[in-house]
Figure 1 (cartoon, helix red, strand yellow):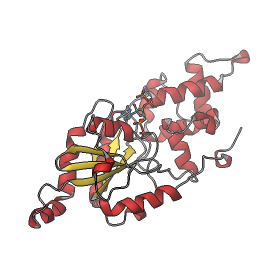
Figure 2 (tube, protein in one colour):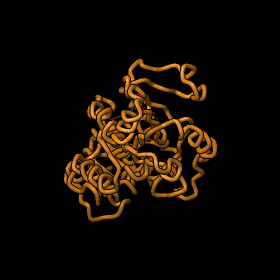
Figure 3 (cartoon, protein in one colour):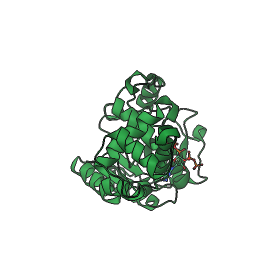
Figure 4 (spheres, helix red, strand yellow):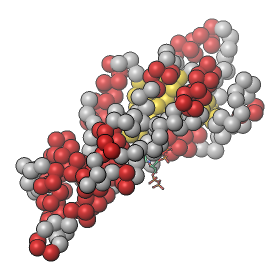
Length: 284
Ligand code: G4P
């Protein structure tokens, strides 16, 4: 069985992205970071804060339809206490999308006031949208921009090839120039991304991954776990839990033992499909 810390994650080529973000930074007013509401810590890029410096940050807790509602509220409060605005989104249905424009305008009220004072009425706010792969960044941009994809060549001072979207007269969005990677070196981050399906299963041994998920679910959502698997006895460790889950579903091999590989695949699939419930794996 392979150990997660020995896994070769795909290389974190951040240098190119770092350079591109630095280039674009003077042209933008704020950054909107899309994160997965189920794992708001592991789905962030650890370098972003230092990269963007003083630019206001708005956090978009996406996939909130799959996260625990109360936990999402707690995260929003937590960010607020840190001086960061956060909103909950479900880009699959569009829920929460209509909050975005107002949130940006509130977060950048000083800038709007400054534009008004300088007679620069009509100058749009420019927000760069960032996010590690699979958090739903494209879904968010598609939802909010629809077909309003603007042509980069029409914008003086803006590098060609950057993806700008005109949302309305007062707001323009820029898709991240480059790929922003998560903190793959961190074993917990890697596991949490694998639980949600943000990274491929075959990077980590499936059974090991399922055992780790069961241990985490035992702590974060014991009632939901027990309810899904027919009164599952939660007293054992990850391996015991996996065997029990398999047994409950009749996944047995000769000798009455559990087919742990089958059970592991089923468990991961059910967590990702939200069948165990709306569960936030990382709490404030
Ligand atoms: P990215 O640009 O950040 O890489 O992510 P992308 O928008 O491609 O979304 C990744 C997956 O997450 C997609 O599913 C997308 O449908 C799903 N997704 C995005 N936002 C939400 C959300 O708010 N709630 C839920 N439940 N899912 C969301 P997929 O399986 O890769 O594709 P598909 O099923 O949409 O075809």
